[in-house]
Image (cartoon, rainbow, N blue to C red; front, side):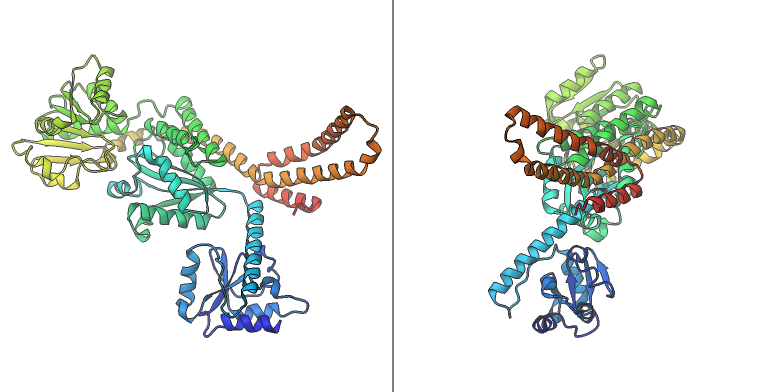
Length: 560
């Protein structure tokens, strides 16, 4: 005991208050609860800081063997590790790591490190058995960030799976992850056992990916956990959190998020698969059972409406009379064509990198004369167009001051409306004379009237979403009972097998089929005895009541 005390004193004896301390790795999981109950601590993440003298005072009691816990201690704050602040920073870098002490024999170090590994592994497993997974959302949207910030984090749909795979590799606390990246939002949906660690890791990944420092990124990010996270995802799928309330495109994007996450290369597990599937189902219910989608405007229709409002002032003629150019041929472009035709526009030209894709778009509106141009003729079309809509998936600006200034030199007025994220039009285009440039953030004034008309419909939609929310949350909370139920089944099966083994000598005269019958009957008895308790636990909706019941079950059957 004195030898252990000498070693601890050498490594963690404080030179000044709180400048030297030790970190107890998950103290509730290595049996040190009574040991540390009187200490003065400063909590940080999973560890606890405490001055050495208080630790030793609590250790020094008859019959206590400090050797059992010695390897769960690690000196992390000494005069050359930047004191207490350095200790906090060091714990941020990852879980507790093994450390070799120079004055100890190699055999002692190896044995101690092995004990540390076993202790931490048991502690982690025990923690996972007691805790349920938690759903977390970290993201930003048109409500919290400008288009400049959103485009820094945006991920093209073809790279969603690769992005999630990289994020999961970077964040050891994250067990499942999915990403949704659209023109108006970027959100990461993930599942963890430890909220704080998972959120910090994800924020660090987002910062590295976007090149935006964490302290700047935090100004725009929102973080939602558990029930609030699920509620947010349901509202997004229902179109209630969109810039344009009730728009239908977000549901198809959420459905794509679900499909990619459930694919072989996806990173969704049991919880996220169920959650995203429930979100898509909730979005469909909202649109079929309420009028939220009737008469709703989309981003594309809002862009056309903005053009209709601004054209007389910006180009001195109406949108109907002007020559319109659409750069892109995807779903957004299809909606643009649809709403331009609805406004009576007949001078429409489509330019796209894939000429075949542009031709397919033209075939959808065969009753209207739509001109198709190859990508090489882009600037020629731009020079003769008065209203230009951009909606491509390009990660870099297509139109900028350098390529526009020469072709628009003789223009009497040009209006450019960019509804892409990342933006297809550089911000410096506004500096060109007679050019009016708008992006998705400029659509807010257009959709404000739409939102005011739809407030009652939003309330109806939310009542539908609450029903789906309760169903999912009850299912998710019931997962916390699965480990206890599994251990109960294993305990019952082991008892059945042991008792059957005891009388096996008396069953020698039975035939093979008779032995199988005995095996089947005994298993049936066990299953029927356990059936009603398991059903009762799974159907408990009150979280606190379920927790109390599970603790009682573990105590009654000693399921530790």
